[in-house]
Amino acid sequence: MLLLFWLSGCPRADEHRVDVDAGLAAPAVADAGPVVTEARVDAWLGWQRALAALPAPGRDGGLDLRQRAREEARLLADAGLTDDEADAIEAVVAAVVAERNVSKLTGADALAQFKAGVQQLAPEQRAKAEAALSDLQAKTTQGSLTAVEAQYGSDAVRVILSREAEVTKTWDALLEARGDKR
Image 1 (tube, rainbow, N blue to C red):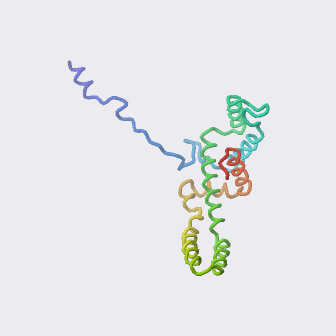
Image 2: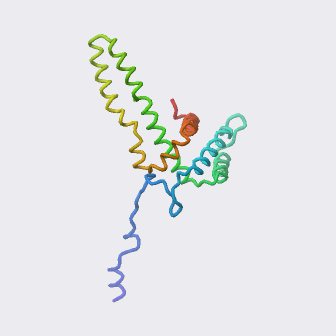
């Protein structure tokens, strides 16, 4: 009877479990330091080049999906990366490239060209264009990498920027291969 009383008062093991989704905000592997290092970005770029060289699945002698998945996993292991590391690097790459693209689209040169074009419009069109220009000017601060640095760390962003041209080219090719680039 005492045992039943004691058991009824003890919490079950699963009552203390708390599920937490940490996301990719801190790209680090437990006890292994930061994921985004120059060596790992180099490995990620090499892995992406190797993936691009694989035949497309199921096309003209291409690999079936299972073969392709096994080959991709082998190439990732050969690059010395885990799935989590590759995903963390990809998250930082995506964020940096996106912000840099926004910066290019809403940068000072684009705004100057837009302002010059606005002056040549008819008055009713000019009012609408000036409102759009105001929106663009408000968004120019979004091209800053401050938010990306706050999320992933300034060291991670610095590493990506050190290889910006190659990383951007690789990212664009990756999106195109996935059918995400329009």
